[in-house]
Image (cartoon, rainbow, N blue to C red; front, top):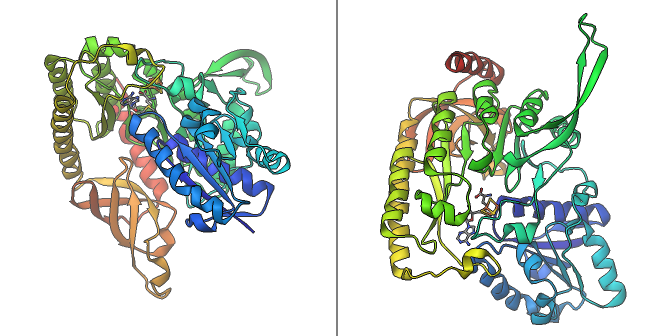
Length: 482
Ligand code: SAM
Ligand code: F3S
């Protein structure tokens, strides 16, 4: 049996792609994953180039693994992901012991690339963008626990001036509607209760569908059909109808395409988690314009306000870039004002990192790095106070959680009736509580009794999740009605 060592850098898309690399290799030959690089037959680096530091780290790590090849000349070393996509054959030039270079859209060709390397002895480079071909070649999803990621679209066509993603992952391409539904239905049959729809801009999802309607006499036989386009809202509506799917998440979404239809879903679909990750990047319209984000601070606030109408308890998280070229002290204060106004539940914030080949890299950037760091620290401190306040406000509330096994489950005697359990809330907070082990991998309701920064403690409510869903539904219908 062969062993795969895989190291993933960057975002959830990369985490997803890494899981697919393992799936596809295991479908072709007998492979298991190892944490020990010295034991590996195949060593893969799934890389990220969104910021300079991430990219530097890849080359640093590559330098360190050279030694493994000296001990095991049969070892296959592959570099995938966004750095691979950007650097291509230059990686093999810089590190000739690398056998494979593949992009996010060609990872399904890994078995063929490995065979070609073994046959010819030559390093293989394939960083093309063969449209959505990847999805057709992936083996069926494998499930661990009751949660699964389903990629619904690839790439990005927004071309924000600071970002490399459109160049490394290609333009937006959506998966066919029926394929996504079939995958989710299959996952539900395997016991999955929570689905996270993944994509660089999931709300740009669009797929052709044929809507068929019954005739006027109410006869269920199809009397007319019409070609139409499905959006993310429709996809969520359909997924919510799949038996077994109790919680639906999506990430990442873009403010530009956050339609009222999608906002309304939060009032109508109880399975939709009360959380949206909606990167804003900055609070000054001049900076948003220079970033080519396609919305103003006011428009962003309007989305959040309308989301809160549908789901008063919704958690909004965001991404921020500090020190974009030309950002003045006043611009930064506008970002701080936006944060104060919205009170984000959590955020990822970064100092702007010029990325080669992007339009912003050519802009004059006069702000000293020390000032950018100072701004970042102030922004993070402010966001931190809101994160704590959000946790504290959850005390006394009832939250649905997906129950996970305790890390030391094997050491707990089978005869012990109540065991320490953990569960993830809609807002991605971990709650600790006690309950029977039969609740593991199910969705349950927990009353929050105590809050720490991002960790909560609670008590299990002893009723069936379906009842909670029905109660939730009726409450939200009332809230949403005019
Ligand atoms: N699709 C998402 C959106 O709607 O904005 C963003 C995806 S991007 C890969 C993830 C985050 O990385 C961005 O939201 C941004 O905050 C950060 N990022 C991207 N390029 C960056 C750069 N050049 N410097 C600093 N941060 C950057
Ligand atoms: Fe990057 Fe903007 Fe797309 S941040 S991933 S180009 S939405």
